[in-house]
Length: 155
Image 1: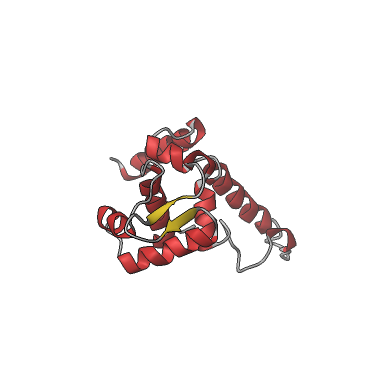
Image 2 (image 1 turned 120 degrees about the vertical axis):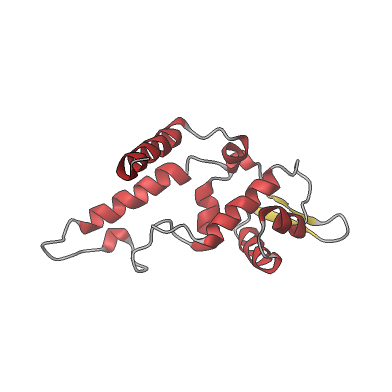
């Protein structure tokens, strides 16, 4: 599973909007603070707007704002808005995959991966992220990952 630069930038932009106190935030301010190309950011914001996660306002007081409270927007919502399904297996529905022996169990592996991603991305909201208060199961997974990585690499 690869988290694209596009998803990473979209989540960071949503975080900037979440701390914007409900007012509009200019795209160039987000681009500068997060070191994202303005043109690239505007393309991402367009996708987020199409998905109804952000709204825009024109004019001197214009900019972008979240379309609903940050606590109601999951990271999965952002991911899907800019990159599509969480775990895509060559554009096929996981329910419809059918492999011949000896790998007939492979669709279950793909389903488990998608389920794991959902367990994390659908439970973490933009509000959780900016508050630094991630759900306990997510913190536990991150801690387990850090510990196993340190053991593997002897750090």
